[in-house]
Image: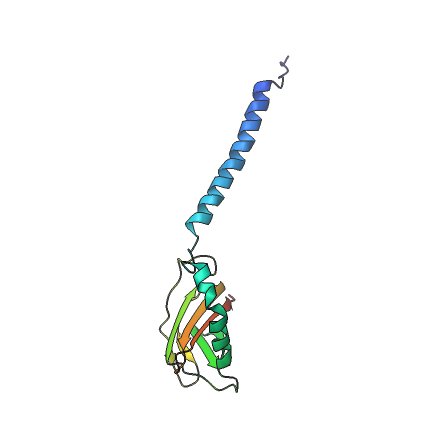
Length: 153
């Protein structure tokens, strides 16, 4: 004859503590990962940066430049075109490639202007990438653009 087990207050307390322990542990792990992968601030003082934003945007739009990014056979291709569709070779040009969610894989590709586009080797894994273009026209006008690039496997 087997003895029937009773559900006691200790059992209820153990289940309660165990369930909330799991919930709290998962929340702490997610919070730690969120803080550990936060890339940081874009600007030191957003108020000061906002004071010249409209002027910088108007100057950039007056250039009439459009930028695009593509990955072709292992090469990153960055195209900058003027309002007539002609290739543009800025006075100064830099690019930063990385994932949109963290900075661990950020890198500055070595790109050369081939007369039409900026091209360079890039080993990009599958998924979404962000290409930040920072260029300067001959007259000193700064051109900044964040381009999204999706690499499919």
